[in-house]
Image (cartoon, rainbow, N blue to C red; front, side, top):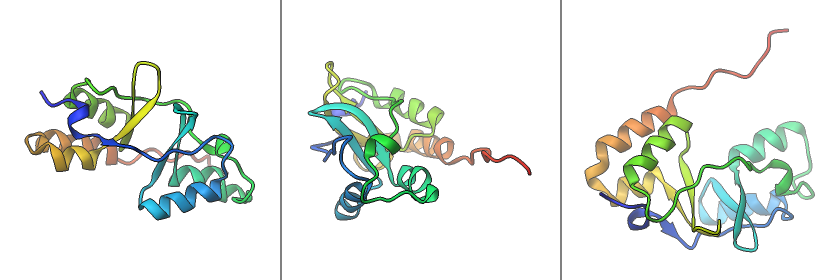
Length: 148
């Protein structure tokens, strides 16, 4: 059994809910990532993705310099813990179409991020599970559109 602590990335940079969308975009560019955890202190309260910025901010023609992360971040989060089994977390990621999952301790404090890439790179025995989860994650969603 491989645990989350064996493959996760520690020391993830986080931002506060009162930080701007512009700052989040700059951090994403600097770190070459597509997600940033949002914390109050070190307690995880949300996640903001590049997609959140585009769909909840830019597509609404809102100003990225003044729009706060609290206005665009996702707050309904699935999290992992260090001792969780990677196979179980992969199943959860696949079922919920999640590519990256925050890792928290028992008090909800952010301790890292677990991505499909982390698992693929650090757990070579999990190749089939990673492939299956990636297929589930990548399956197209139904468009959220109504006909005129």
